[in-house]
Length: 90
Image (cartoon, rainbow, N blue to C red):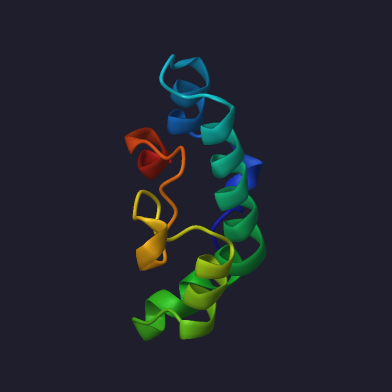
């Protein structure tokens, strides 16, 4: 079984924290993604990989959490206000 994402500091986390391109909004997004992964994904990932499928309910939860549509105009259902390419990298 895999370790929860929040238990270790990844190389990307370490680099992001030192980068001049990442600000508070990027860190807030990273923490939001981390919480979502820890809460709704990690414990099921092996099962989903075996089934070659991620349940639609989880995809909907990710959308509700605001993790989809970054950089897409609001009129198309996205969120582009204050979003830059580095938010997408997160």
